[in-house]
Image 1 (cartoon, rainbow, N blue to C red):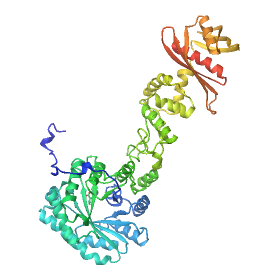
Image 2: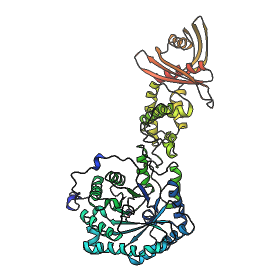
Image 3: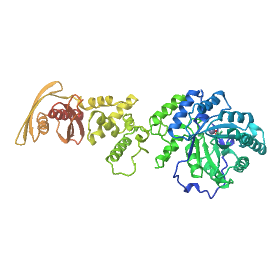
Image 4: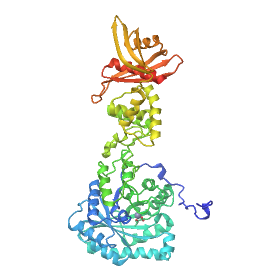
Length: 552
Ligand code: KIV
Ligand code: ZN
């Protein structure tokens, strides 16, 4: 990289719009959506879709509720032409769906496009030519007037052919391609020149699509460009202003959202953001962003995983695991504190009584889009005590006391860290067993018996201590205190029980009870122990020895 990037790259000159109004607006309704998956998305695939794949994706888009779908560039290839004919002749296009076709301002291409549309009910013919200084200079070697003449001539060739589509409801669309890099006054001038030819009216509007063909500035700059156009172009009420953003600076979604605030009516994009280079706008994200603000997006993504599956099969692409809403991991929490907060938030929501969704870390209810939060159950070295405890409880019914979670959490994290990978529940349970349940040195229980009378318990126990059999006896107000007293009498360490809890284990666990005990030694140290047994009393005695052995 350069030490002085300014010697090679420059700032992007923004539009002057000091009285911009879009920052004070909010979105209240869904825009008109147009999917460009089958054109912009398809043309960016290493292996473009065949007719069968395009049809499957078209049907999936219809099922989501797209009413405008750019089906291709029928003059560009036989597959694209054949696809249009198949859609029309086999009746695959619902009456309320409009198909859109892209075409350059060349007479032969326009002719072929019109031929491909004959017999359709609703169509949009989408004319474009590129308008930015770099395109004018490098690609066309033409002046602004000559570039404008290309657009006007293209618009005329289309207008001349409209009678050929009698009986078809035709809407016209013009895109000054590379709009966001074009001088704004020239973008207006060329758009108005096309309007002069097509003569849109409020009753018969044309679509003016203002593409961020290559994203070169921050999204607020695009919003200013859109607001400027909405305010300055003539006959605004005869236009549907459309956005078409790409994602070169990774702000395609932001640019679209701000562009909608700035006054646009319509949005073009693709599922999951497929498209040239870093992709087109991801329509799913913008639609679900609206949804999470309580706005009906007018698109149905209630089975997002099924849609993703069709998309991946047809395009050969993979949705990244962190893709908003759709990615494999977006409803998976790895951090223990996140897991804990989500668990509490979901419990509160399920209890009822809250009007609005407000679960920490989950912007929407995964169930609304056919997904589940259960994917969270995994532990890695970053998972906190909450995640570890959650996994032990949800999979094995082991309900660690809070303070014991604080002790075992870091122990488990260190073990997982040493493994250098995530662990499943079974491995975590094994770690817990090794740390607590199987701690039987230096003290091991061989036999224990206790009787209680009038609130006084007497116990006898035989133990193995450092390889030698030891018999002990003691008394207390319960079997545990009797056993602790017996140990002290036999010369064992002086300890006291500072916490005790026991509960039954789930039916499928071999031992039916588990006990947790915290012992405090005379020098003020505390350790937890745990024991399992089919006999609840023995489980607690084993827990005492587990804690004692861990105190060392
Ligand atoms: O990105 C773009 O500018 C386009 C146009 C053809 C609309 O895809
Ligand atoms: Zn594009």
